[in-house]
Image (cartoon, rainbow, N blue to C red; front, top):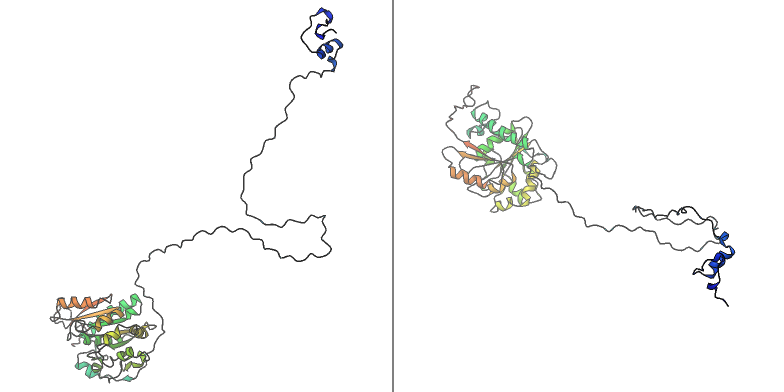
Length: 361
């Protein structure tokens, strides 16, 4: 058998190294069965690219999937199955820090409890006008004079301060002096009579000199219980112990029975309650305290903590500077201390009140 590679090709061509099928295709014409040549390249299909989606956080919505329309409900009702309520996940609580309040500037406004207006309605006694004149005090019905004019100026400053501050504390006035015999009771009594002449106000003069009370004898009134009895017994109301006078607008509260513990009573909480009843709810009422001398007894320093104004009386040519400074420090519990010079005989400016009206008092 002849090897296929040695079979001569038509046309006398030398056989090439090829397969049997290739030679048969050339001899018998298999070329028509080849696919037609394609010009160019077929278009490549476009590749699908993934789109970038942005993640949008939306609130979680819980919904119950709807039942397909073609599914019919069962004929018999299904047994009730307890359903667990659907809850959404709540955010983790964050620790809350309370804001720190801003510091508040100090203020002179005093917040006090309102106990209502306490009316003064004690028994009324007549005051001997001649007895007042003998002691050198102001006689309400007398004509204008130097003494009346002097205390008009003093009371205007005290009333102006009380109206400006507008508090019950500012309507309480303490009258004291460094030593005995410098005129504190004289000034307190005249100041009370002068303020009682105001058309739209009233004055309560309180004898707070428990060791040596003198207000009742000054006005010629009978002795009786007073402020100290009210401080010692909580069942006693101070307005029940007030004495009225025939001087319109002037009321007097006696000192009461003497005790060896007057300073301790004054430093108790009962004192604030009693004094509040005398001033709260009564903006037309002024309360004047005739206290012991500041350098002779301690009650003056205790009372100074419960008043809004203090009048420190100094006697001309008698009271020393060191005594005034020491008394001022003891009465510093009151934020407003005023100095009143008593018994002056000389005025550098030639001041002579009362002479203009032709009165020689």
